[in-house]
Amino acid sequence: MTPVLLLSRTQQVRLACTLGTAILLLGGTTQAITLLPPDSPVDATLTGSIDLETYSIDQPAPGLLFTDDDTYLEPRLSLLLDLQWGPHWSAFVQARLDRGFDPGARSDGDIRLDEYAIRWSPWGDSMLNVQVGKFASVFGNWIPRHLSTQNPFVTAPAPYENVFGITDAAVPLSREAFLGRKTQADKKRDWLTQIWGPSYAHGASLSGRLDQFEYAFEIKSNALSSRPSAWEARELVWYHPTITGRLGWKPDPAFALGISGSTGAYLLETADATLPTGSDRDDFKQDTVGIDLRYSIRHFELWSEFIFTRFEVPGVGYADLASFYVEGRYKITPSLYAALRWNQQWFDDISDGHGGSPSWDRDLYRVDVALGYRFARNLQGKVQYSYGHEPGLNANGSHLLATQITWTF
Image (cartoon, rainbow, N blue to C red; front, top):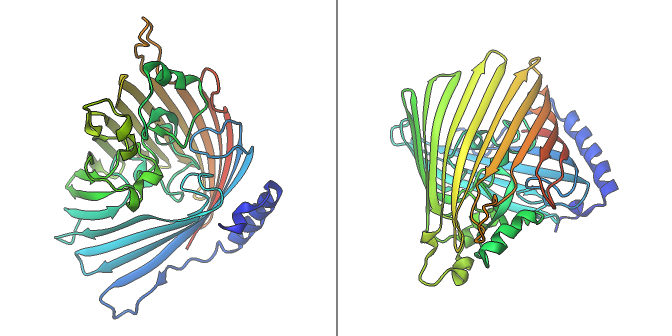
């Protein structure tokens, strides 16, 4: 589709160097584009970013990297259109050109509208906002900072990118077949994550702030674990919506605590033909709860989340898992920072039908280390090294080296 994205590995490396040099030369310029004259009743502003990511991978690729190559180049152009008319109404649209929402998912190139929404603020302040469209979930505290300009790392925490043996398009043939997925390599186009990135599904939300307290509630077309293809408008099915909410306490700018919850059917319409007789997709839900924390003092910031999820799997029963991550970022200088993140994920034991109780997937731990440098106000670079471990056959690779250059305009 896009010839630039079909280059050989050597050509990709050369292109990365060329684009990186060009971005560095552009680093001193930044100017949002105003699309309408000053006397227009509507303010329309266009901003964007160019991300250039490279990955050196220990195969099989961990997380949501869809590639069999040992090295991989992921360029991305993001454009954000903001509209504001009066104190009560606003809207936004975010479009991207890349090699798939997740690196390599569409290696021949992809153009998408990842977000679009209209927002109404009846009192013109932060007390109440009503939003309708396609937008990121309100769950937890990583999603609000998932963009490359806000994430201290190149990759996401484990709960948002580690794939495991839950399917949404069809139910397991048997309990034995379900447990057998534990020894298989990740099938990233068929299996799910606990929360798939920012979960840009369609829906509506209510959010706001009252003194020290924040609230946000949404009703969406898909569960938190749903894959990007299920977020598209052509896949919308509203018979089995997911409800998600978060309550937060922020007594001062340095501290924030939140609790989130979500419930909804995770199976897609294509799974209907494989459901047990007399059952419905609403009989098999994904229930998720989470606690999140943020703390900052001087040059140090800390974020953490603990997330528990229960999947009701047809013919199997409850498949439970828990995830935890804590990450910290320290500003060494105004331009240079170092970041460290610890991730863990545990899978519960379930009966194998023969007197045993194995865990239904592989436990994971992973450590991420990153350095970031801001070359200019609108230009930053990152380098990340990750080491992860999963036991058993066909486990994901342990080592990952990633770099990212981001230029905003």
